[in-house]
Image 1 (tube, rainbow, N blue to C red):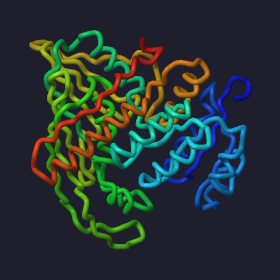
Image 2: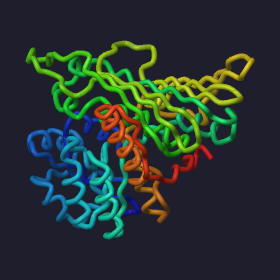
Image 3: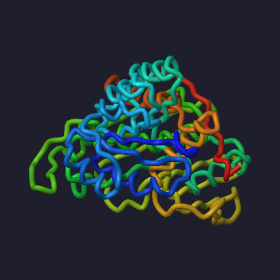
Length: 357
């Protein structure tokens, strides 16, 4: 750490890396040191654009004593091994979602971070957005009264129509790639989940890449899950890689005894937020503060850096991420067994952001 800033290195220079790199300079507590990727040409391209060092391998990055925290932006299935190496080298970790592809592996990474007295934080952090925090504050203040029903929608378009390499996302599946956003926001707002019941189906088996290559989808591209939360509320989650231009792109509806909150997106920090009181008129709720237009992916880096510098807990906890992973595993199991599956993990809900308190 130099000049009260955390020096960060990034491993993985794929599609998401540019979003992080474009946003890093917005913050006061972090400084980009360098990049690495298994395809060194990609790392060189970004290093030239963002004026930072290139590491030929992850091991060389981890041997640099100037790097305090490593940001893991590798592909889903590589996460656990990359995180293990980073933690074993004595450096803090911030990882893109998911933390792991199984609850067992997520717990192993948490145990390793605790053993080495290191921070482990995981995306998604979209509940840290201005409109999401505004909704969270209204819920915390009791605007809705007792919450009994939540609808979360993820209609993520046909990813092969815009992503240059869509097949790995279909292999991982819609739930683990983007359903995780809605689950993380809803559990951040309302706490843990205790039971799940899932249904999944492949609704479009044959797809075609932008290059015209045909491929087959074998993992459900449509999932419907009914989840019972510890607070007694029922959460209905639907997500798919099919519906285009949906009016309910990433929307969340939260219904309580006093009324309902309609959050236009759990993903977009500038999404509209509306409250409808029982028997009353609808009203638009303004943001707590003017904020980012879109999704500020790198906000989680600033949050964990500020937490490390000030020696306080970070909000995007690995325990929260692990709970969501257990829920997703349970949904997958329920789809296969056609049975209700119990959830046993727990976590502490993240507090409101300081500027939202």
